[in-house]
Length: 77
Image (spheres, rainbow, N blue to C red):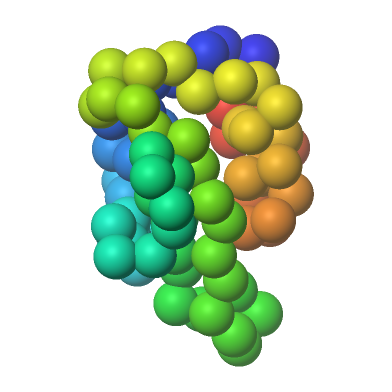
């Protein structure tokens, strides 16, 4: 599994589905909420650590994002 920066991750998710967005009003401190408006008919959100836009996202987060937003198994390969 390839590692992604925060900026690359958001770009890849929005390219897959433009309904992905980052909510900066929710979350504490350096956390941002990754939000999608329609996953199986309901709104889904997942918190991400974002110390800066170029920070690497841990592979553990990528697996959780893939599972939480029901993305294909090979999405991050």
